[in-house]
Length: 340
Ligand SMILES: Cc1cc2nc3c(=O)[nH]c(=O)nc-3n(C[C@H](O)[C@H](O)[C@H](O)COP(=O)(O)O)c2cc1C
Image 1 (spheres, rainbow, N blue to C red):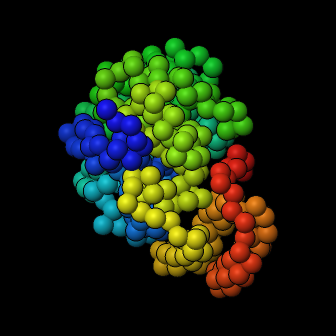
Image 2 (cartoon, rainbow, N blue to C red; image 1 turned 30 degrees about the horizontal axis):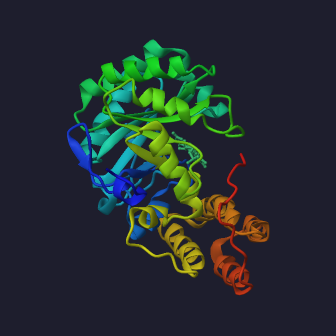
């Protein structure tokens, strides 16, 4: 019997015709889950998969990976990288999926969870859950076009009804999805109420494909509790991974976080974003990271506001050294419940 989180996380898991070695994965996150951030996470290790930022299916066939801000990756991460796509047209989604397969990614993830206005306005993301037939046709169309693992990431839907989430799960499985990532919140809910983990259990027990639970895992106890109370096969973590990119390595075991890890990680990310992006794009991404990273400290808003006021990357190192010279007090559980 598995009695420890690290033992659970280190069990291999089959997804479609492939296998992952660890069950903790990086959730897709626009702007923050960029190639530089993923390199930082990769350096620590401990994860099963990394998910890209969401990419527009319409654009993917024409994207140049060396220019695109989102459809960009390092060859070294590709065999554990899942590309997330959004779109509303089954044909366009299938064509995008073919390119992703040709590029050698581990898998494809369909975004049926994003509820920001700019995405829903295009009838994409969570908006598609209002039309389950279309959602299922998109899954089936991609399934027909590719053989690599196909993930679906979705939310409870637009009403707080677990049965809707269960029916969607069954529909996705029947249409050929290999795994689900389920975030138990209704679409208009902007993370200001707790995720309803009991719905993850209902979804998990309604299908035979793996289900990754997602939402509000802010420490290792949360993670273990989600696994034990829902029976989910793995966990996707988002905001905590931004604040503490070594979380995967720590929870999988064998990694010790030293007190200097906060400063070292922030410095390393500054260097990585500057290496992967032009200076404006690097700064934008570092600022977004800083929002979550600052939540690690009792007076983190001082770090946050200094970084938000920057006009270029040159002063980032000075600001970081200055902030850490004062030995900032850490919080055990960062409060990541804000929405921008
Ligand atoms: C900054 C940010 C960007 C996000 N972008 C995406 C995205 O591109 N695609 C997606 O499916 N979910 C996106 N999400 C949602 C996360 O994948 C995840 O479902 C959510 O944060 C809940 O998990 P958590 O409580 O571990 O953070 C984003 C979340 C955050 C905080």
